[in-house]
Image (tube, one colour):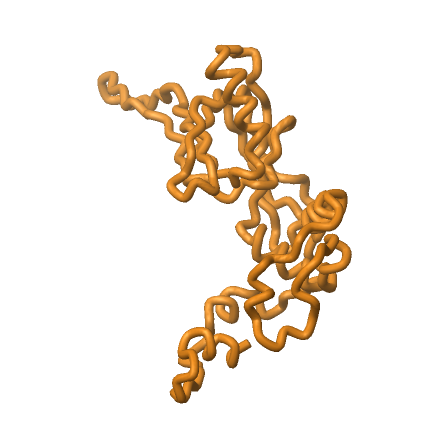
Length: 230
């Protein structure tokens, strides 16, 4: 691969290129030293592979034809099963793709493509009431923020339909309940969750790169919950 890259960048120029490692890369510094592929839940990868397999054979990427000395055929169709890698690699991909350790669950919505949720703060104003020598703290209404969610455009059809239903047609009965779930590093154990009540979509717009969309959700109630102690 290095020789192919040199030929592409330099052509026939006789220039020596020597890769030099100046330190650990981002992967070496990010991947846990105790990374165990068997401990990672690869079900999201399996589900995606099954969906791709149902599409049947798909043409190979044309870029393969530009590679010199490529050891395999560079034309024709391949199915998902024909190009799949070992499950351990799938576990590694799952760790990278879902490494944020959170999951958004909203029934009826495809949340597999959720790539980012902006940080948010739940606030409550406290008034100090003084009566003579006594002081009383009076809590006011809790302020629930909007959730700003970035979704891959290829997985956003459910989100677009929900936006049409609530915003375009004005159907306010389409509110949903859901949860923001925080997962342990093994992607199986649940650390905590924020239950979301009466969630609605207020806005849906394309992101700057056009490959993603950004949804603004309102939520009337949030409740933090922890799983029972073992």
